[in-house]
Image 1 (tube, rainbow, N blue to C red):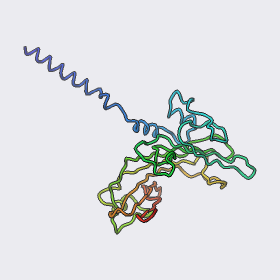
Image 2: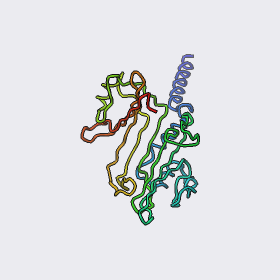
Image 3: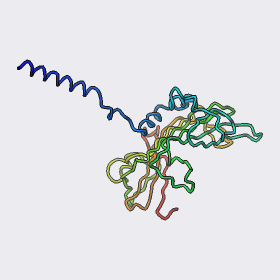
Length: 253
């Protein structure tokens, strides 16, 4: 009898170890948002349009590249997503460079506050990709990727007698915000124009180093002032500091 009990105990322990060694389907399964975020993280900066499509769509990527009817230049672009272009031409009408924005992964939980209910903006999607070419080239490279998280509600508040200012470190931000830390960021952006050049319109390109920013929205204690600010890594301070800040009061429309 003792041998039987001993055998049952050993069997029970073995089964327990086997079950804990293999996670349940519920634990393995990822939400649509998590899967999309995994794709976002896998996208490499300066990837070609084809390489990005392979990451996003796998073996069937060719079906997701097409000459979009709204594109005048006729190059292979992502077939899905809202498309905006800011292609630039010189005085003779010759193409100077290509630049396209793709608004992808609509977020059903975010209401569209635009006058046009069909308009797609960064507030209504989870991912924005920007591709650009060098001057006098049609070879597009991924120069910006943005991830928006509408569920990231920042519970921190700015003390009413304090302000968020450009150049502040995380420690200084913590000093003007309630609680500890600076709360959740609502957007992360990777920017890299070091290979193709960044320029506005007909200006000559510059080739800045790649960087990453985090964006936050925080109210003051009275909840009548909204602070929107971005943090960017400072190579001199060796930490993230506020690189941009803007405010809206309740009276502003």
